[in-house]
Length: 274
Ligand code: G1P
Image (cartoon, rainbow, N blue to C red):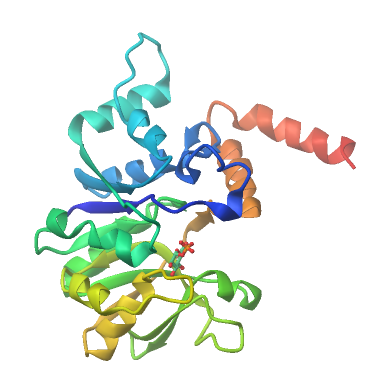
């Protein structure tokens, strides 16, 4: 199975942090976000990746080159071992025209086969894509990973309706009144290649963007089965400040090198900082 990682978005919700650096390169504990995603794909057995980049995203490509200097660093060595086994391709989306348009750039790479899609600004623990692939392998269907979100957050995500074990409706960023449920698309998918034809049929939204959610809705309307995968692990949306901070705190607390000292720092900060 191959993986596609869209990383072309502008990251406007994270400004000014993302003024000159890609949001996928924002650090979380000791690694940039996109490194967690490459590791997730690797753990799921994926060895070929296409990253869809765009303007101001050069740092991503540089990060996955080999480090030339002789330095001992566990995380660096782990990354080098992974990169040794992986092939990473890059393609640029020339204009930010939405996630659906970005994915169209992966058509030749997918080469008529099902592929995984991992959004470049989402970290999951444990590896969500592994579970989604297992469900796809059992059924042969497209799979969309979901997490339940509180009603005030439905307008940030694609929201789905589930009936009889299938996804029957998908709405991109609905208002709480219009949301078909509180099940949100979390950024991990296994997609069958017929998706590309549906993306081509999608009308741009109010911002002129082609949404993946709308293409999946066309697929479902056409009678194709799209299965829900209920992810029970943790998911961090690095596209908003609080979730990004939470990811830093939780993953640093779990880090074998930083965890113990960092816990002390947090406890002291909670006493000292008003
Ligand atoms: C994208 C998708 C949305 C999904 C979200 C997950 O939105 O369009 O359906 O719920 O990722 O993070 P974005 O965050 O790029 O606006």
